[in-house]
Each structure stands twice: as C-alpha cells, then as structure tokens.
Length: 178
Image 1 (tube, rainbow, N blue to C red):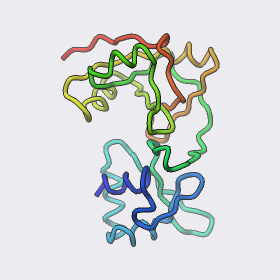
Image 2 (cartoon, helix red, strand yellow):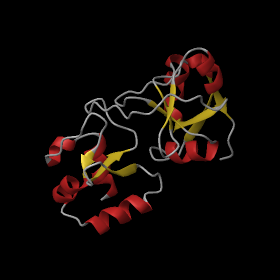
Image 3 (tube, rainbow, N blue to C red):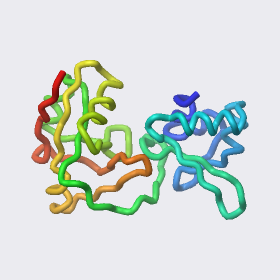
Image 4 (cartoon, one colour):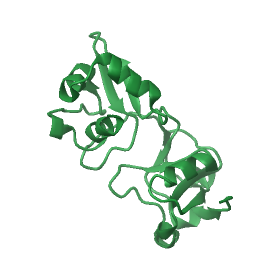
C-alpha cells in the first residue's frame, strides 16, 4: 500500500482522481476514498515507512492533508516550499555500478524527477542504491564546494538533500566495504 501511495502522491495522482495542490498536498479524506482504506490504516503506513516518505499536516480549516516529502516526477509539478539550506561539506549518492561511467562524464541529473537526491551518509546511500541493484557504488559529493559555487540545496523533512544537478567535477568514488 505504501508503494501505491507513493505512486499517487509522487507520479500519477490523476490515476485515482486526485489533484495535488501547488505544494503537492491532497486532502487525506480524498486519498482514503481513492484507496479504500481507513485513517488508522493510513496512519500506520505513514508511521512505519522507514524513509518517512510522507508528511501529514492539519490545515487552518481543520482538515488533514498529505504529501510525499520528495521524489515527484516531472509529470507532477510540485513546489515543496523547502527553503534553501547550506549542506554539509560532503553528501553521498548510491547508484548501480553500471551507471558509474555516464555519471562521471555527465554528472548527476534528476532525470524524471525534479531534483537529484543525496544522502547524509554512506550507509543510507548504499541502501538507496541497493533498491535498484545489488552491485552498488557510492559517490562522494563535494556539497560544500558546490554551495560555495552557487548551487542551491534543500533538505526535505526526512533528511534527504535535494539539488538541481551535480556536475562531474564535484564527484569522486567513495571506497566502501562490500
């Protein structure tokens, strides 16, 4: 069910008759109706999501709204309203080994997403990379240098760092234990 919620809130809300507002929010009541689940079931899914992918907020009218914290595709135009924030000196990105050549030549690009997603540590980057392959490499991103060079960073509520792209000059291969 968590994957279905991610699909609806990040990529295809229209497939369930949902309409996200400009910041990616949809009324919880609308999502529950679209999924045919209870609020208690939704709360459990949100609470148990190991990546804190969803945020719920109460609006002024007393209604609860939900959105994906990040990862929206370009098909869904969303302004997460995240302020720019200075990143730590180093961030990380895990990816299947087969992607390494093109990344080192062209840098990290958001592809179908709005931003490149970066991790605060090697362990998280490995976990993220392993969602697509068991043969993963981790790239070290000189985020502090990027920020000094004018690149903008944002940090989502669940700690994922976001930026428009990472040019190849800011990337190095991070040694990891298999």
